Image 1: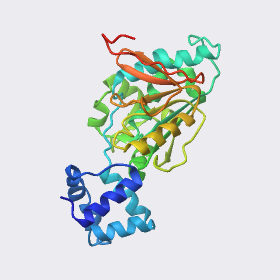
Image 2: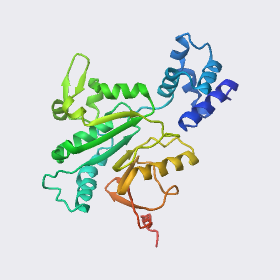
Image 3: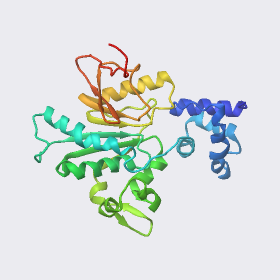
Length: 289
């Protein structure tokens, strides 16, 4: 059972991130906050809670967020998503504007990668687009956001270990998009320049707008329903008409939003904003309409 300080800390984590820190996750408190205490600024968890409530220590806020949240990511994570992006979503987006995807076009594509962690997802988007539509890079506006300042620093630096680049990348892709340095593998500046990183808390933060495509994969999964509903509404408002929302494989807007169309290609499901306010559901096999 959580003691009084742990309960108070769990409430602050929920207020800040929307994440419910249950008893089963108390190990997060015990093991991930040791470095905060070791710095000598805070003697115990109760002092950490008081500072979080006051909201005056940005360094503490970033340290807590970085240690409590999970930053699991990799290049081309769920590779089928990026295949669908380049084989279906972008071509359909272009055809709606009367453009031929097979012909170079001077057109602006705006994408948001939210919950981008250490940068693998937005950099993967750049690589995937460059492989199929290199002419789109010149007008690509790709915004990547995360609540954690520490992970954003790593994302901006774009230097990865050999283990990190080996997850999801072939040696050919690694050699074409990364420079080997003394620190590791650095994403080449000519490709890195297409991504802009910003710190954003999806609980109470002001969402950016005007996007053709939004990636929000495994970012809202631990939020309670009311906050999740508000986040989905914010994501929909971030999309242009007929914009596309891409979630994690275990996530869905069903029950949280209306006014969308479900699209399905192979193992990938995504959601298209539908101004006609008609929602189409794919019935499970064997279920009658």
